[in-house]
Length: 268
Image (cartoon, rainbow, N blue to C red):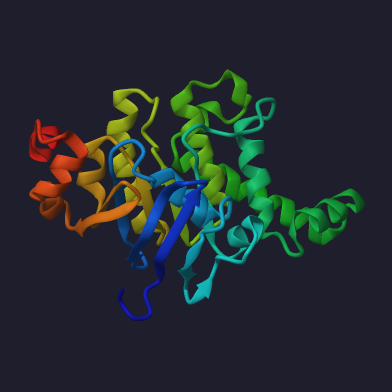
């Protein structure tokens, strides 16, 4: 494990009853990297995200974000410390508009937090008016940036699944996280939207300085944008390396595809 890594998982293990779902998982992510997490179904990928996010506490191990151990921090504190996370299915307010959903996430950065901002807004102070204007401007900028301007005033229940996924990503970015966990961002969306997702993530990394750790089964997408790949199998790190190294790794091919194909054929 690199000394002083920006984000590091060290020796994380987790059991559900008699089932060992994570076994001494360890790897790191450097600031500004895009690291892909791959593996067959049941490898423990989403469970690892749940551990990092604070929904499960590991039996042992550490989760370090800029030197702070997140293991004993509640989920909401992890968000305040700079962790953002999407899920396999978008979880948004169904009766709110796209721009209002993103504005809600922007309030995390208001002085004193959302509750204090709400009280100040009810009183109509000069500071609250200025803060609300800044929130609106930031939300509209993010909506525009993610290609959602045509849907800004539509409620979430009216949106296609692909547009919902982009709106979810906008809400995460509105919170200005330093590390974003993306759980299968291309799942359930059209091929055209999947093809646009890779360049979008690269642009966000470049322009916002975001760091991404993503789970993805779309091999062309994850191999095309990741700086490094971590392969999980049966709750353990099977291999780690560049996309080219992982595609040439016989153990990964065997675990992921049963040896019937090569990853090069899947990516092509």
